[in-house]
Length: 92
Image 1 (cartoon, rainbow, N blue to C red):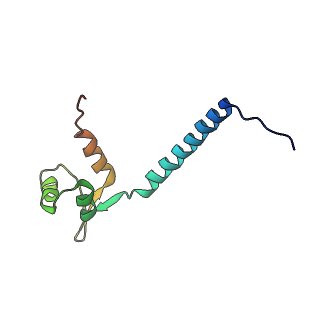
Image 2: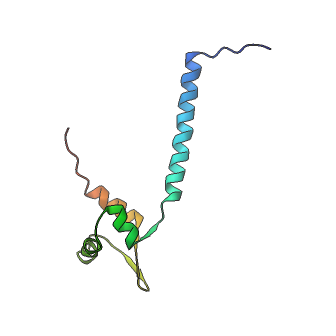
Image 3: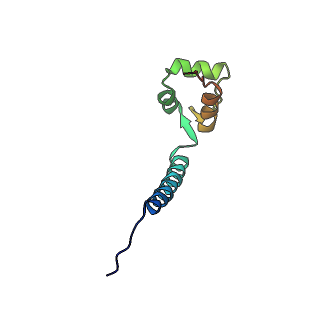
């Protein structure tokens, strides 16, 4: 049986390829696991707000929603957009 020599550069290349594959898998999982439409209870839990605060967001137009029957639905993309717009960067 012939011995194969693995160099440090081989290990670096393997590491790089492995990390790229893991990154791809995580990106696919994150896009497929998040639901497009969330119910009020899910939004309250996600944002950590009360039902009254969520209602205020609807009333003042901060958060758009869709009502079907008696159930309110919120777009996950809209929530992400609002969170990004209100992000505060602090210099550290």
